[in-house]
Image 1: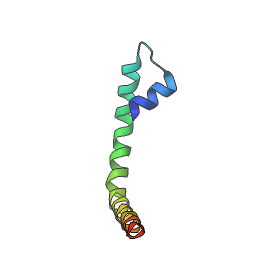
Image 2: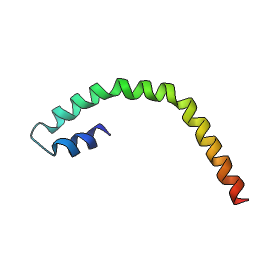
Image 3: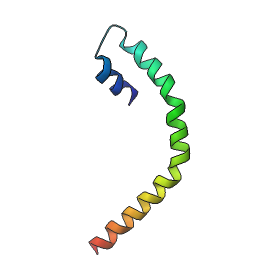
Length: 58
């Protein structure tokens, strides 16, 4: 994801990989914390949605 966003913002430059590495290092802690704290909620939401969809298909 960080590589794609770096590409969209800056394009391919001579220092693309330096920019991407910096973005990755800065974004990783935030992504980890978001995943850690939101995974339970997202899992429950996915289960609820799949149950709704299954009941509609029956």
